[in-house]
Length: 302
Ligand code: COD
Image (cartoon, rainbow, N blue to C red; front, side):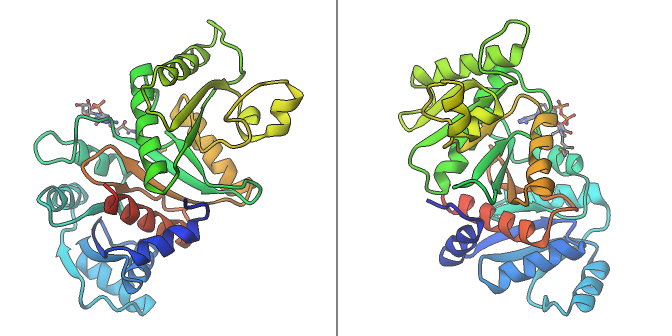
C-alpha cells in the first residue's frame, strides 16, 4: 500500500514506461516535471502545443527534449481536441493538462464524438500527504463536479475507491463529510451521506469498502474526537477517502491542507477511458511530478 507520495514515484519508476499526451505543453513548470518523469522512465511524453514556446522553455531550463514527439498547435481548443484524439486512438496511455483552462480540456474529454467518455461519471480525486496524518488522504470531488446529486455522489465514491485500490489499499474507508454526524432533514448533505452508508451496508461498494456518513471532518480524521463524542466508527481516525458534498468544500479543504498544513499532493480525473492529470498552475513542481506518477500507476493498473 502506498502511504507516501514518494512511494508513488518509486512504484511508477519500477513499472512500464507509459505514453503521456500533454495538452498545451508550453508551460515552464509542467515541462520541467515532464522531463524529470521522462528521465526516470516513468513516461514517454507526446507534447501538443506552441512548439516555438516549448523549445524556448526547454532552452531556458536546459531541458533535453530533442527525442520527444511534438505537435505544433497554438490554438488551445484545437490543442485540447488533438490531444484527446491521440489518446482515444490509442497513441497515448493517459492525458495531462498543460497551460490551458481546465474547462476547455474537460469539455474535449467529454466530447461525445472523439472524447474519452465511458458510461461512468468523470470525477476529480486529490491525494494529500499531510505531515500529521499516518496515511494518504484522498479528497473528492473538489475539482470537477460542482454540486453532485446523490447518484453522482455514488459514482464519485466508486471512482475514488478505484483510485485508492489502484494504490494498493486492500480495505478502503470512506467518510461522507457533512457539518455534523446526525441526520437532519434541514441539511440535505447529511441525508445523502446516510444513504451512501446504507448503500454500502447493502454491499454496493463491494466487500472491502466501508462508507460511513454523515461525519464531520473532526470525526473522520481524529480517533480522539470520536472518543470524546462517544461516536462508534470503523472509519474515524483512519479514513482514506473524504467524500465532500460540493466543489467548494473539496477545494477549500484541499487548499487548507496545502497552504496551512504543509501537505503535498497529487491529482487526477477518474472515470474516463484513461486517467487525466489535472494540476493547477500554482501547484508545486513536486505536486506535478507526483500527479504524473499517479496517472502512470493508475493507467498501468487499469
Ligand atoms: N462525467 C461524465 N459526463 C459529464 C460530466 C461528468 N463529470 N459532466 C458533464 N458531463 C456530460 C453531460 O452529461 C453532457 O452530456 C455533457 O457532458 C455536457 O454537460 P454540461 O453542459 O453539464 O457540462 P459542461 O461542458 O458545461 O461542463 C462540464 C465541466 C466539467 C467543464 C464543468 O462541470 C466544470 O466547469 N467544472 C468545474 C471545472 C473547474 O473549473 N475546475 C477547476 C476549479 S476547482
